[in-house]
Length: 143
Image 1 (cartoon, rainbow, N blue to C red):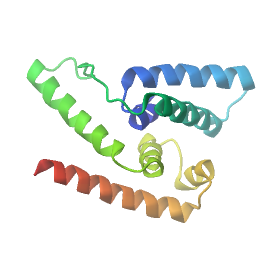
Image 2: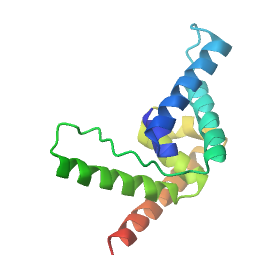
Image 3: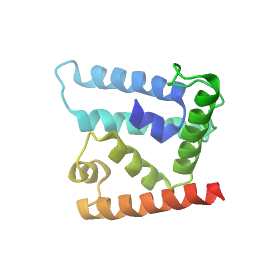
Image 4: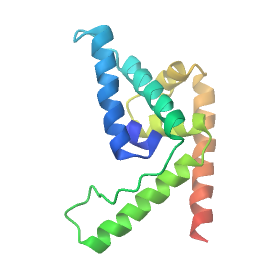
């Protein structure tokens, strides 16, 4: 779910895509399948299809996962999260996906390279550059 959330920036769409991905996975491979990279590939493809259809419309709901905080703290936390997702959306699609996969912590750089059909070294370089770009985007927003 977190991977899809970072990829799409929309909580409801991420839930829908997660359900769709599991449904496709189970329909194609049954309950005996235990192929995590394949499940991520299915989820990735579903997210890319959805983003093409929705053209990355930002989420307008005002929900917060930190519901135990007072309203002001929730608002501040939501603004920070929205700012990060907006910065991630400004990255090019491959860099956005790399950042999402690395943040998920489900795969090694080697596995991410196989998943995206690029070398492990290229993954490391692109992740480093994407992080620098993300840092720059966030810093520019503070000015």
